[in-house]
Length: 267
Image (tube, rainbow, N blue to C red; front, side):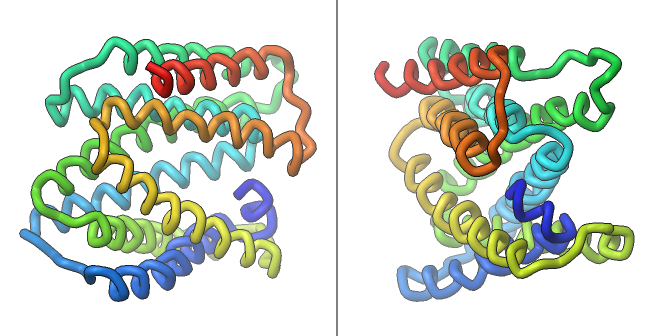
């Protein structure tokens, strides 16, 4: 995504991701059990969940990626497990588990090591980038748990929910691209287009299929911290693919995040 938004206007990149994932989702649903729309309230909740998660949260995440190193942004955005645990307990009435909260605390503690301290020489955009990533984590943590679990437990099937997530994301990105497209200074390239389609497939299509399948098989408060494994992969790929060089402080932060994931996985 960091490479993609460097080669394409942000709004257009987000819209192409949503549109391409929809092209994968429709045949997948039709070849399976089809799409079944229950009561309108659930459809609206699913739409708003997709708008919040895959537009608002992802927009904050992309903004952070444009202004800060990926090795900082990815782990910070993945404090989402902590907020997911809170959302599961507060909104869904799930019984709090000590292990899940301990894992979430480790994730947040790791985030503290990853947030930069302003030294006067650091550009303001870079200084604020990690905090924007943290805001993305809050949005993702709530949006990927509360509306999902609510809709699935009240009769909406996963395929239909995912379709509404993509529609909500496409709507948000379409409006954003329409109003921001004229002011964007980024250039369009085939490389950016390819990355947009690739991340649309891996994230909005395949990633959501796996995520919804997991939520059907375990309590949300236990599943949410496992999502922190994204931090490990994002950190590794930022070094391998983007040639970034993290500080010792950043390494400590990522290790704490990964420790939280391991704790909830083995317990």
